[in-house]
Amino acid sequence: MSLTIGRALRAPFRAVAGALGGLAMLSAAASAQPTAEKPVVMRLSHAYATVAQHHVNMEFFKQEVEKRTGGRLIVDIFPASQLMPITQEINGMLSGQIDAAYSLNTIAATLDPLWGFFELPFLFDITPSDQKHLRDFVKSEAGGGALRDSMEARGIKVLAIAPTDMVGALINTKRPVRKMEDMAGLKFRIPGGKYLGQSFELMGASPISMAYAEFSSAIVQGTVDGTVTGILFTYDNRIPVKYLSGVNMWYAGLPLLMSKRFFDGLPEDIQQVLVEVGNELEDFGFDATERRATEVLGLIETEMGVQVEPPLDPAEIQRMRDATQPVLAAFVKDNPGGQALIDEAERLRPN
Image 1: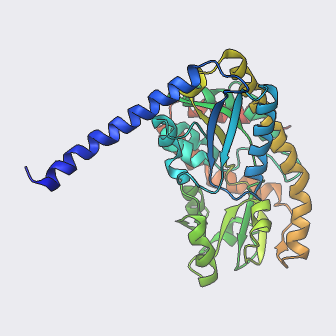
Image 2: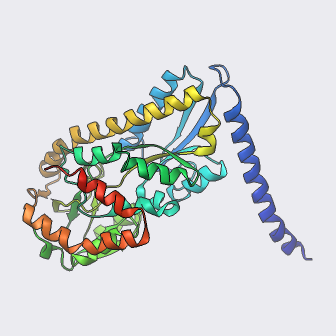
Image 3: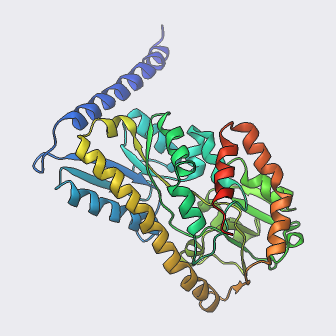
């Protein structure tokens, strides 16, 4: 056997041994009785800058957890993908490299396809200042509870589904979107996923999947015309667009995820703190988003010179909803539990 082949064969064994070693250390750390002098340290990863609402939400989580556990559990936050890309975080939790991650529904769906639910269009009647319909779903046992249970069966605990933005901002450089026909021929960047692109195609637009880092240059060069994103994100990043319309095509569904193995190894009182703070984090995220989104819409108009369109006519929203029904049918076909989630969103719809 050559030296090269020998190294190639040994490499997988070293990788497995390293992963098992990491799990052993994680288990030992979590099962030891923590004290303020010898606390358990939780490694939490997220992909966003420290100025973003994502990090603000995690600072709230850290502060409350450490205070309520008397410093027995320390939350060590690694922002801006310092430890690993967002696409590797779930594997990182399952292998013991990290303990928790503040992620996206499209990332969660790579492990549990049921989380593709948040890509479905026009499920929730929400506005920048009122996200009660979505909040009620997240808090519902048949809604957010079912998504949590499904993910937990795969080894990941969902502590919260906490928004950082109102993501119904359809922005572009070409023309205002006031009716479905205005979508025709526009090239929209999407952040991946399985179902969002289908919605764009059914309304006549061309979806192009790419990371935001690529989008920054693509919109300047005209490779794409716009994207569907968050109101706060548009303003914080000063995205160079001309038009913004409110179109509720997806919901991001930002989950705070934790390795179930790590969670189960903690003392019961610390587990309870994590659950309680996770519930409060959801309200913290919704409150912050509702408080800021309407104000920021005005700043996008006055400071950035973007033409912000008034809310779409309800009849036009219904036309878009009707046109994209095949996306919901495709989701249900792919996910046996999908119809129950759609039914719960419909049950909670405001009269």
